[in-house]
Length: 256
Image 1 (tube, rainbow, N blue to C red):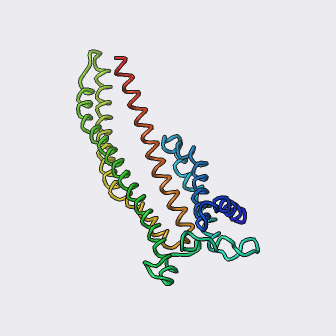
Image 2: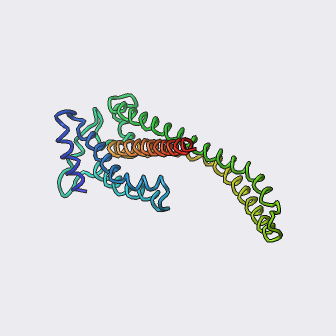
Image 3: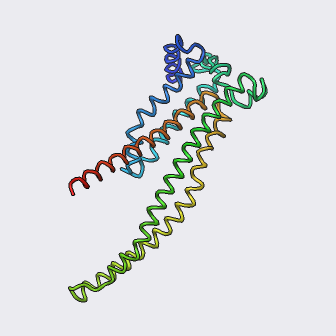
């Protein structure tokens, strides 16, 4: 933890001529961005579905960082010395302060309370953005499943027709028809699951607000930055994927 404290303190000193007393807060944001940049290859692999574990690794690897951030702004001493980070602020609010403490100092709309309200507002905007994107993704997946279920009966009927090759091909066709029927049934079940998850999972983004209300302000800044990065990163990866698909589709049409 002393290494982290030293790193954030040094970053804050570099930014201090420009940002004055809020330099350490900016250093926390910069530190978070550096962490997410280091984890970007894993996030990209998770988006592409390269490995099942890839989707969990970026989250798991951030937990120690968040824990260190929490401890660094909760401990009065670091390495046997007074914690210098506790004296730093974001505007009027100390980076080690919690929202419950601030309410007792100047109230909800006091100088420190307004800083927390600004933080909560920013987190709410990011959470809403994430929820909207989550609902759209769930809707697109459900629509794809519905389209697959709609075309499945036609494929099953075509597969059941006996071919010119006689009984062997007819038997194979009947087996294929059963397989398509099973796929249609699974697709319908998946569609229902996606519909339910699409209404619930996006709302989990707002859980960050609860966490930010009970952790130090510095940890709340980390949560805001990493959550905003995650949503923006996924939006960018999705844009690149759709762009690549459009280019591939255009190339196929031009060749035809």
